[in-house]
Each structure stands twice: as C-alpha cells, then as structure tokens.
Amino acid sequence: MQTIYVPKGKANEYCKLALNLYDSCPHNCLYCYARPMAARFGRPWNGTVEPRAGLLDALKAQLEKDYVSYKEPTKGAVKDFSPPERIPLKGALIHLCFTVDAYPRGFDTSITREVIKLIKEAGSHVQILTKGGEIAERDFDLLDENDWFGITDTGDCSTWGTPLRVEPNAAPLIERLAVLERAHREGIRTWVSCEPVLNPSGIYSLIKSADYIDTFKIGKLNYHQPTEYGFPPIDWAAFGRECERLCKLYKRDYYLKDDLRKAMEASA
Ligand code: SF4
Image (cartoon, rainbow, N blue to C red):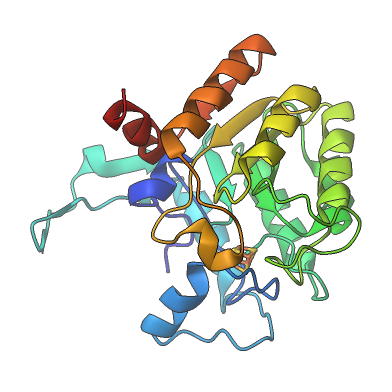
C-alpha cells in the first residue's frame, strides 16, 4: 500500500502530496464530497472512524524508501513507471488529509500524532487541514516553522459558538479560529481553506481581521449551488475580485484556486 500519494485534479492545487489517515469522517458536513465518493467505490462510511488498516507499517516502509511512485494516467492507459516519476519525500510537504479529517471529533486520534512523528523524523513536513478544533493542539509540540496548520472556513458564521448547521459534528468556527491563532503564536505557519464558499461576507471579514493567518487559499463551491444549503446565490467573479482587492489592501498572502480564477476571467 502506498500511503502517501499524489492527489489529482483540484486537490493537487492545495498540495503535491497527501495522506489520508482514517476510513471515514464523523463531521457530517452537508457539502462533503468524500462521503458520496466512498459510497461510489464501496468504502465504509458508517459513523465509526478507524485508522486505515496497516497504515503505520505501510507509512514506515514508504518513508524508508523515501519516494512516492507517480503514474500519470493518459487517455485510459497508464504510463509505465520510470525513475523521473519518483517524487522524493525528504523535505516534502504532505497534506493531512483530503478525503477525511485529520482530527475526527469524538474518536481516538492518536494515530494522527504517530503519523506526524514519523513524517517529521523522516525529514518531511505536514500541512494539516481540520475542522476538529482544539484536539489538534495536542500535536503542536511536534510542529515547527516548516509545517502548516489550517482550518476550513466557508464564510458561514451564523453560529459562532456552536457547530454550524452545514457542519453539524465539526468544531464551532470560533474554536477553529482560536486554535489557528494559537498555532500562529507557537511559530507554526497557518492557513485557511476558504472552500467551499457559502457566504462571501464571512470570507471578507476574515481577510480584514485575521492577522494570524499566513496564507488564504480561496476557491468557490463546485458542482452545487449555495441555495441548496440555504444561502443566497453567489456572483463568483465579483467574489473573487473582492477577495483579491481585500487581500492586497490588507497585505494578505493569498492563492485563488483555478476555478475561481476562471470565473473571474470569464466575466472580465
Ligand atoms: S470534515 Fe471533510 S471529510 Fe469530514 S464530513 Fe466534512 S467535508 Fe467530509
């Protein structure tokens, strides 16, 4: 089993390497794309959360080999493996996680700590993305200025202190932001994934106020409409332009995802 892999498509914009730790996620976000994908491929997603079978042994073996094998799919075929497609792991940044959360609330997350330790001991670094809230702080002692700690913010700030309706089992937004601020104070690099976006004004407020966020990665809501989740429609081009204007005005480091850039270009 190759645990660290090269994400394809839109995920690759976030990080060139990734690792998924668990077999499912309890946060039950209404917009989750991983849940229907798991159902499509017959993978379990049943409310219990377990570390992926054999994860630690497979990760140790891969870190020892010190590379990821990458096969580029071409028109239904798969190119033969060749040495240039070995991506070295030492010094690389590895995203935790795309298809599950690195800190599933209410479940044993000790394997997350074990995995971070192994990755750091091998000379690589982690880019964490979580809605798990303060349980993630337990592992801050393992992180340094080469690591990134991030949260998701859809801009929905309708309930600050309790879980959001669209993310019923995730940590409240105020808790996620407080943990992000603490990560920044401890010298860990911080980022926010503004994707999917449901409420532009919440993102604008974040750009204006959150000095403790080192990088904003901003996208849109793909494949669905905000109205499906009870939010007004969004003019994506106007949203992208306003985000860019505010990021420049407040001197924020930012990255606009391809889909958002395309929407802006299409209406230019
Ligand atoms: S935290 Fe991520 S993986 Fe978990 S339910 Fe929400 S969107 Fe899906």
